[in-house]
Length: 114
Picture 1 (cartoon, rainbow, N blue to C red):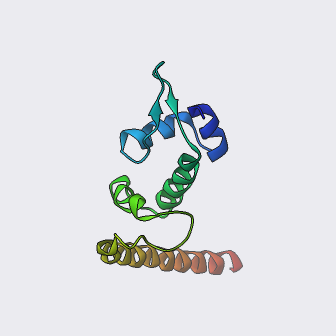
Picture 2 (picture 1 turned 90 degrees about the vertical axis):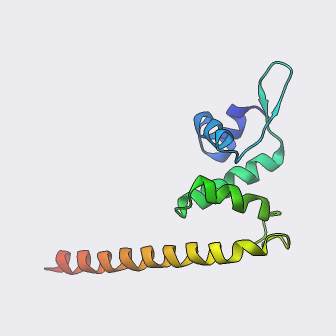
């Protein structure tokens, strides 16, 4: 599929897809005309990228993690056990951020109640 079709299906923009490519996260085939061509796996990859970005991971971290996601399951590829420590650190960081947001929400709720 072409870049505009992938962007539409993924709910993103062609510009975002080109950025993912620049960061080494997405590798489309190139047609003789120079146009990018994406296979069906690209849609799953883009969805993984979007999820990991929304979790606050950097594109550098995502570049390390993507090869370790073999499919749409939640199991890390057996060739990637070295990522477990880094994933644990990211998990702890996200947990701290969630706790901070929950505390802020509690304060706002108290203020709104007067």
